[in-house]
Image (cartoon, rainbow, N blue to C red; front, side, top):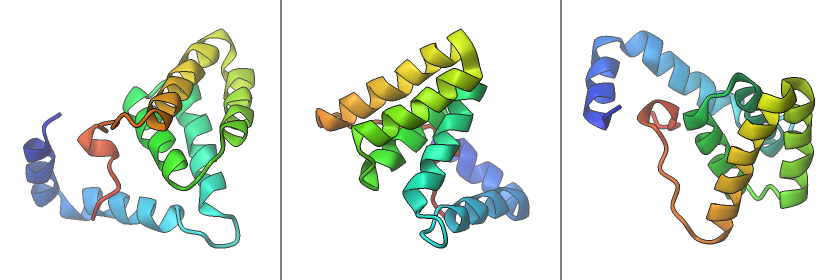
Length: 117
C-alpha cells in the first residue's frame, strides 16, 4: 500500500482512520502497565492472527522500547502455544525481524501499521 493512498484515504475518512491512530497512541503509553508489555501482548496477538505487516511493526516497536531477546522469546512462546504449528512459523518471522534490527537493518512497515498522527 502506498503512503499517498493511505493519506488520501485518511482525508476521506478522518474520524475512523484518525480514531484508530489516536487509539494506538493512547494504548501504547506507559501507564499502569508499562508500554513494552502492551506492545509484546499486541505482538502475541498479531503472530497468532498471522498479520505480517503488524508483526514487523510491533517487533520494531518492541525493539525500540528496549525489549530484551529473553522477553521477546517468552511472549513468542505464548503465541506459539496459542497458535500451534502455524504460530511457530509466524513467531519465527518476528524473531527474524528482531535479529535484523539487532544487526542494524532498517525494517520498513506497511503504511497502515505506522503509529503516526
